[in-house]
Image (cartoon, rainbow, N blue to C red; front, side, top):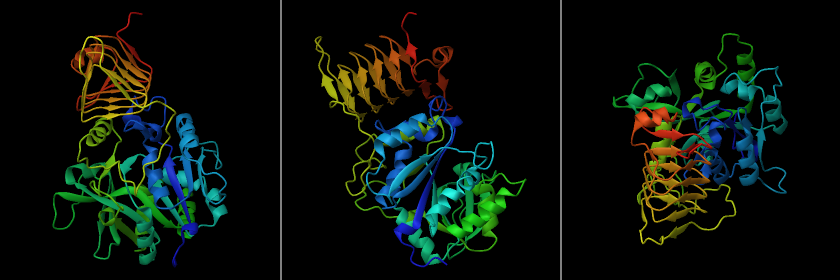
Length: 416
């Protein structure tokens, strides 16, 4: 069994092949992990920072749908030079097991078993790629080793009304998994706390030999969904050696925000809310921790520039994030995120919005609770997010909570 596994004995796998249909239109031309976030990051940067800051530096990223944008980002932002035993390598779906795409999370790993076996790891760490959080993964692997577990699943507490979206777990006093339901209609609450459920974060640590055995058996089952949550975890749970790592016990050095912040940004509303969470002086998610640096790709651009136009109008920038290359020229930007190279022209108003890179917002525009994907151009005087009937006629996507999303490359309001 696992005795004092070293960092060299751990191989990390990131599942980054999701189509992300619930994030449409942000995923119309890119895979979900490549969706920009917080002005200069991509969603995948958060799990990659967790691995690198935890000194886990043998990483495969399993890609599948619309992966070109993600591959470019990985090449620009995440590469090691001259260290043969340290790597971050994207692995496209290679159909080694036949002419088929990955049929589930477990199948994605199964189709790449040979790649894992080459490294002869003691443990395999398998994480998702599209959550916003910080986690010292070494603390989870140490817990796994101490418990002599076959599988350890990371867990977090969520309000009971949200738990139906996730895999809900029951544990005993030792932290052993004794019950698991994937997306149940009636989730079970924690004992003594009817308002809270314990859910899977989709992060796993496996003993490598156990992983091989389970995946090979699962692949032969014609009735399986080939999914970790639906199949592998319930099957392994029967032998009593699956443990649950409580995310509430994870410690990040130098952290001043909420150490248990974790957001699944699988929908437009969740993505928008996570973006808004960043925009106050006491943000729950701390992006400014030098002991846990947040790496990404930084293009060569000048600093953001804030100009006073000739007509004397003043800028109003409140509770906002402004990336490099932006130009704000006598406009109001409040509680908004501006990505690289966004221009906001005089008298425009941008409130509670997320604006991605290389976008121009014309003079006198009003944008409220709006997401603009990259390369969007908005004509002077255009209003978005204030009249949903008009926004719908324009073909924009409107979420359940009224967030308007404008697709990549859209030109709005100019004469054709």
